[in-house]
Length: 252
Image (cartoon, rainbow, N blue to C red; front, top):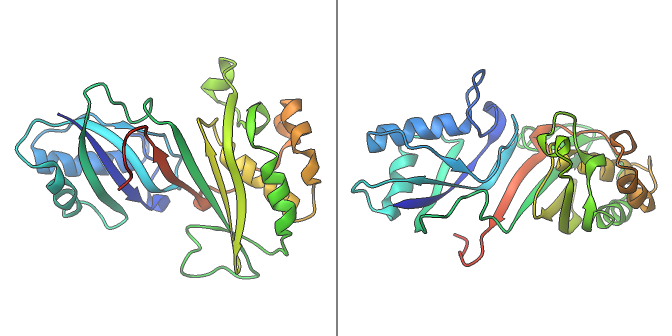
């Protein structure tokens, strides 16, 4: 049986999702729990390769399992074997050809900024603090400039395999900024992302909010295809994989 498993995790302690030779990862810890529960270590196909320190509110993966534990009981059984910063949310059977990465219609990321002179002790690991003040309308105008189908090479960090193959065109269907008191949240939905794309996009929007760049200049940044024209790569701790959509599958 091919099973889709939704999980949520706080990435602070981990070297990303994908198994790495030089650090503990979310996938490694999850597979350890699976091996303890199932008696075998199933290969896992994740929807994304989140970087070290990045979090996920809803992360999808699939694996094959032919044992006797009903799907609906797998999350509870896994959670009894997982640390509290990784939680299994829902498991359900999917077609044999389903792949968590390739079947995704789009993914939404959030980047959280706290505009404050001091860190909040309750969320400093999950947002990036800036002293501000921040101009919300300027940030919203800059964010809107990224919507549409564009070549996003200017928002791609070096070392990207996609960039090496010239595959840098993506479609952003939504890019917005909202404010809730001191907390500013950038939300980006796209059909795919380049290496560090959202963190660079967030850095560019932040500079607009700080008055360091003209929000109307975003199209020129994209047209330049020049990484030096965009903003800084913001820290990983503010980034969340917020949701993944699959055609025909309801969210849990």
